[in-house]
Length: 222
Image (cartoon, rainbow, N blue to C red; front, side, top):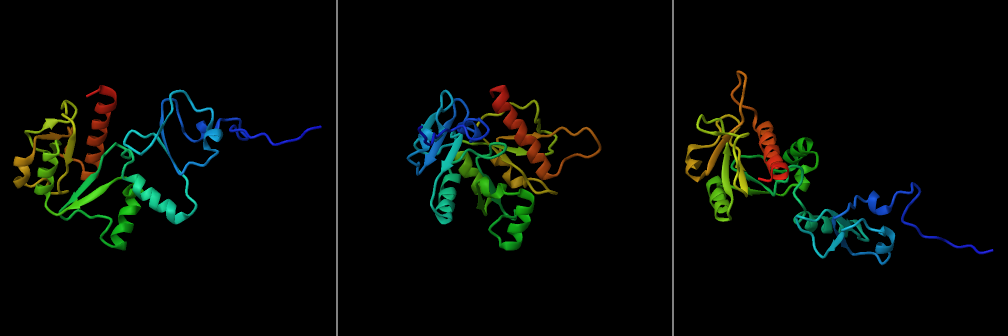
């Protein structure tokens, strides 16, 4: 009579480990500090899966292996900078002027975290004191500067055809975007309002505009 241990990647449920880990056909996977048994554990991989040498915006799955929490935190910090943008696919958020930000002390950080629910950690952000200087730098980098405003001359968001890449500018909750920034704008768009109110609050308006941009990018091929 013979006995032994059979290693399998199926687990108790019979579902392949690769599927449990979210590795889909055609996915790009990055593995850091790869264990010697990794390839055996996840085999067989779905068709078309490729292993990347570094994290880029096109990486679908990231597996990090570390021996300590400190090393893991350092690895996460460096990896997040290269990860695919979260949610609506925003590359980064540029906060200007008096906009609240996470680095303004514990009270402000907690207030933002209560609303963002972790997004402040996964979405890259930076602070620029001068909005005009920030827009000029983005223009130099090839971005089209598009303001979301209630101007009568603004284009309807849902009939507008964007030129990529887009920098979406959102102004003050009450007074909007200052006139001095007007020469730096390539386009002004608006969300059509059908009732008595002429606009949405900034956060809601941003969500509407960003997901329309995402829809155009993913499903309309624009």
